[in-house]
Length: 442
Image (cartoon, rainbow, N blue to C red; front, top):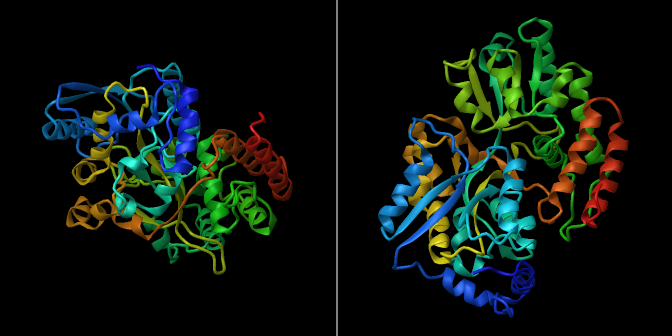
């Protein structure tokens, strides 16, 4: 059932604007969608490309979900294909496999930044006509936006990552300081604690030349209400707001609030420094709570609090977080499209989302489960606090997003390291993003 990638591309883009009624000579899209709409009654075996899902209690979370699905659909078996844990290497590996028209994996777990790239290159089946009209009512609006490309849905939600501010409760209490609501207040508090010799670092975050830094940049830009792209997908980065965001990142290193080596930090580096007792504040994803509260790996367990990220002084937003996370995509060359769509929808549905809530160290994508008593019973403040956050999408609506991201993290890293000024970095990033959007290499 080899499928012409180019044919599906043309058909898929046409379908996005024409309600998926157009077809193609090699493999009519309507035929694929008809197959995808039918759950098979005969035996089928799926392959699910999935990386390790953090667990709270020990059971392998993916196995729990597979067993629950197989109880609902005893004619369908699901086998795991262990994916890489790093986003970029994971993307490269699955792209190589799918680009060769492989029928497996049937379903693959991918980052929320992938839909435009994978949809535009016909590596994912457009799914919106297979969903009820109210499907997205239960999920954050930002998650829907990052799952679409040109009006077509290419990914179904599974779990989210949200950014929080972790802080040392004991150190703030000792110095009589509240949890900061602005970045300016955070800098003052951090300097007070550092000068007293109670922590070598004030604020730990991720500044390496990687997607981790793009997430931080996107959040600081949102704090300053400075967009990267406009509604039409054209570059919009620029102006005083963007320069304020870049200047804040520079101020952290310039004042010593952030270690000079933050330009090499990914999530694990910043988390290790914080759980080792070397920082007052940490920006990290929701999963970091598990390690921070675990006495077997954290020197500060029991002394850590969690709050929404601060904003800039003034009337700007507070609690901004990138809409991170992982969603399931369906391989258009799967030999079991109906079973594959059924499994992807099951993962987005209530039963699988409750399994995540009770067993996984991640935030379920389905909003409704987060308000249940079981969410409070877990005792993870990121689960009960996530609905306070203001989720923002990264500029993922372009199939050239990896290059757009590179433009942001490369120029921001130069600012952090003092190799350029915030104004120069913003201008350079704007030029790089325009180049990226034209499909030219940086």
